Amino acid sequence: MPQLNPIPWIFFFILAWSVFLFFSVRKFSETYSPIMNQDYQPAHVSTTKTSEFTMPW
Image 1 (cartoon, one colour):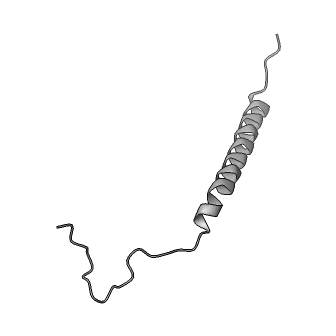
Image 2: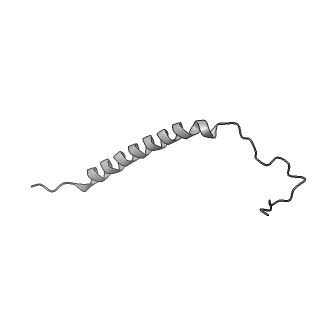
């Protein structure tokens, strides 16, 4: 049985993982971009009247 060259196997392994990660990130960004692109509404508007930290008690 002839010995196989490991270089093409490493290349194809890295190529397959990079394609998989590319499509995973693309699907993730398609899923979460409508959530991220909503209008930002700050929960705490008035910063002059209150202190820097909110007191929990």
